[in-house]
Image (cartoon, rainbow, N blue to C red; front, side):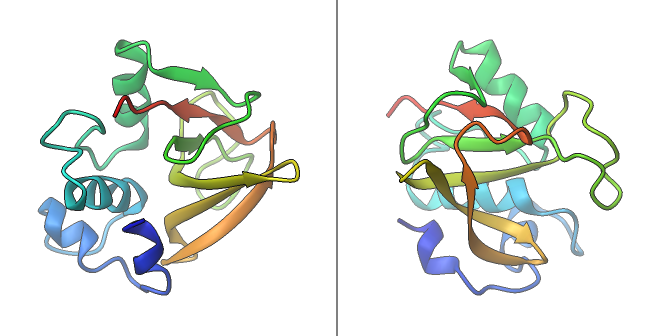
Length: 141
């Protein structure tokens, strides 16, 4: 997986600059879009080319490729979060604050690769159905 090869990157370069930003921005969806581009998924229309989490969620919903956070995901799904009062994102409001890529599901946990998690690319894990998981974009490959 392209995303796994990026673990350890700090600061989001080259993802936000690839997207066209001249300086660092919130780059979690830039990372997802960059990974998708490396795999040919942007050109094929499989993953949205966006820097915004809300736009990404809407893209999947408009195509009926969205499932809520209670389901057990599969590798390759795009996981969207709605943080509960973390940093500047505020309380949960039904809008996505962060995004990652589902790497695997094991023993009741979803494992992800995320960009811009503590300003780096890293693996994370959450219980399936975790309350801050808004839902999943379901790419059609």
